Image 1 (cartoon, rainbow, N blue to C red):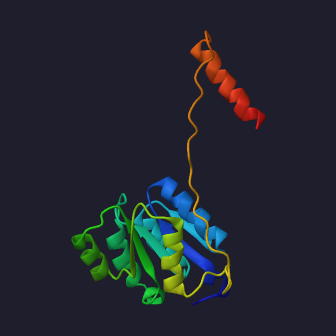
Image 2 (cartoon, rainbow, N blue to C red):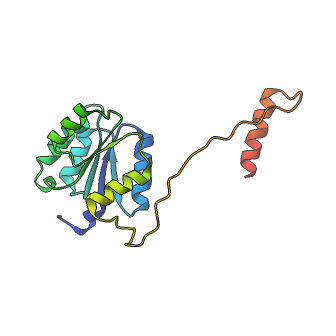
Image 3 (cartoon, rainbow, N blue to C red):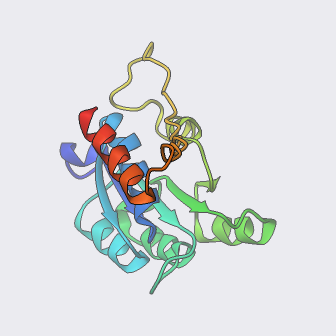
Length: 171
């Protein structure tokens, strides 16, 4: 690798800001520095400016998809052996074959659990920088929406909404 700071750099390209946020959160918690973008062209630009230890690309993105971006990144001198993961909801053999042909190292189907993501990264990189040999098991976050309370007897719906906001602010 070209410099010591890039050992922990990860390039993430996904047009879905929620997925980018989840990936960034999980990876930063493991000690990685995340460079995120929304399309393949910007991922290639990041790859030319830095040597990342891992590249994660969404399959379907605007302007340039993940398979084409992977093929371009593989042509860069420092990225011949760098692990590249494709994230996609298209989990079929045709997509997997195209990914393998472009030089993808791993294929992760959406939706995925953070634990599965960390397992794939650990397999590709050895171990994560933050976790030691006996590090704690990663915790998967599950978001549950609470059921909204019904309005009190005779209470207009607008007042019940205000009561909910007031209860949230009190917490």
